[in-house]
Length: 226
Length: 193
Image (tube, rainbow over the protein chains, first blue to last red):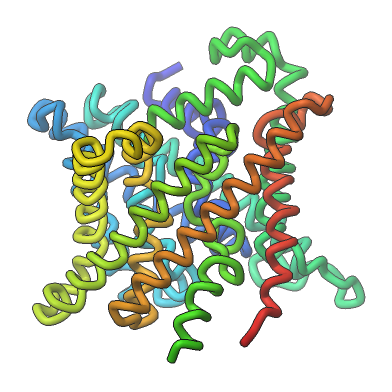
């Protein structure tokens, strides 16, 4: 497989940041009350992630190793501020819906995690593809979570009435507990599938094949990402 | 007035619990809650850092950023202030009280990317809180974080011994516990003074 396509596949499926690596949980849980919010948040993060991967990859030989984390944070924070101002100016409804979670993209573990794990070791073009893959993986997971919560919790899909009016929607799904439940459900499904394809996983991820092992590995990954 | 200040603390800690209803600081909430002791230490460090960070962020915003018309720079300035603050607190504790440093030490660097800290600083600006209100809201929020993470650590220590179906092991059962805690905390929404 072409290595650029491989980056996209890696971000969307193999190392999906939300569902497999469990990074960036805060925005995932918080804004997934509607499918459209998921797309808005996902694409904002994608834009920041692609640009930060590009800039950090370009500067990877310039930034001294000891101060790399503060340098990354400044780069990411500047990009987030620019994105925030652009969204406020051109997409006021998205700005209104996402609120404080747009500036909080700065502390999204996915962005610093990719900078640390990928962009500072690879060429700019590969890093951009990595950013696109990871960003799309994040967007898809967020939109899926948003769609499930929106359908169950308010009976609509992208604002269109989906369930008949006579069906009482389960309001709990658009409230905070629903976020935890839906994400838990996603991971249970992923785990259940993972058991069936254990052999493949063993080869591809170097995981020991058991779910607990994967989670432990992912948690160590998370600690290093921080 | 006093009524109001109390409400800010209670609302930060219980009604709008930072973890269970605003979803800030989830990474450390899920990652560190494996042991009760570690959770309590992290909670202590978070209370310490968030309270100081809200104070410093408020002073900087009202005295430097707002008068100069640089309020759009608040995200960058706040995150740098928080990162620097964590470093300073770490160095200060290392020198002045090694015992506290030893118990908080490894958790302090984790706090820089804890979105609760930046979240509180930004919410304070959004709500136009004055200095005292900012500090109290920071303290209340951090108290809520500590409460949530210690409670979750308690639940997880019980879950560890249960025989769960394989797909539920690890993250899913923790998230389900968090969902149940969140339902319980929704009960506080009716709380008013």
